Length: 111
Length: 114
Image (cartoon, rainbow over all chains, first blue to last red; front, side, top):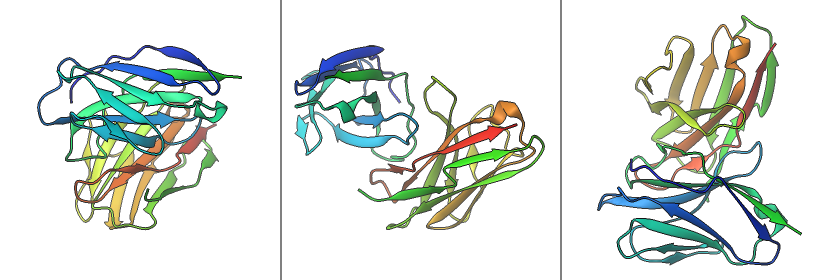
């Protein structure tokens, strides 16, 4: 799996958009970008994934640069319950459960 | 998404005893399950991969005789920590997938060995 780099922490005001960056400059052509989050003392929660096109679901949007070397997870209207560690993972589509977790970004949403 | 349930969510055991943690896929059949361990303020580390009906594959540095994994059915995998010691205290998390679809994580089990 390709290595990812994320800022260790970010703050966001409640109600504002949270933009979480991820660098994955060594990503290969068949690797996807996945985002998970882990709220304290819980298992990781799947958020979204994409290959090269931007993706949106009910939780978030994923913007992948054209060269695919970086991506941004966008939480459009952050709430206090979005406070968590967010992990960006790059891997092939097969063996979806076998993920290499980095240190992630601790997002703190403040009132 | 699909639901993966772990039991127990918390367990405290005495040093030298064994503890079994269950991971169940509640509404789908999981051909493959994965076990992770997470120490405080650290990220998740993959311990092993288990396929239904076959032996688990352990990551480098994980003792297979200490962490026994059984995946006897398509909905259940168990992790047994044998002869537990305080350094085995950790947050254990499983994930389950079917085919190549997205995997889903359990809520985790907090093990404390005293």
